[in-house]
Amino acid sequence: MAKHATPATEWFDVPSQAIAEAIDLIQASQLSNYRYDPSTKKIVIG
Image 1 (tube, helix red, strand yellow):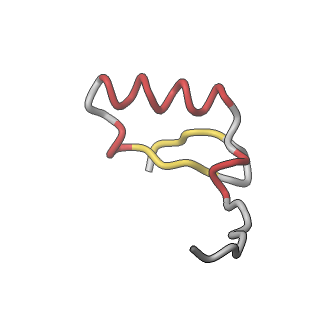
Image 2: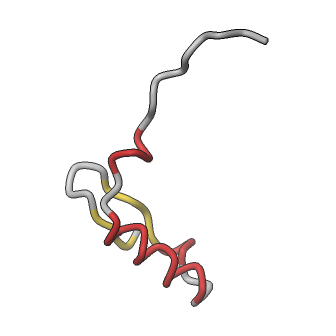
Image 3: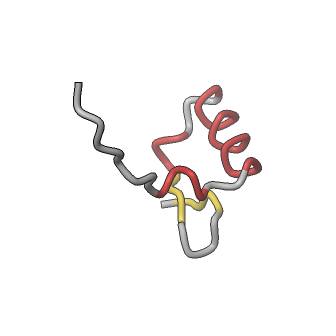
């Protein structure tokens, strides 16, 4: 088994509030109407 580490990517930089909002949107079947904006660290319409 290879022992090469892969550096973490963007999902580690998502605030818990944005994750909670994404969960709510998934439950409401609305997530496809939104996107994550990494510059503001928020879920936005788009």
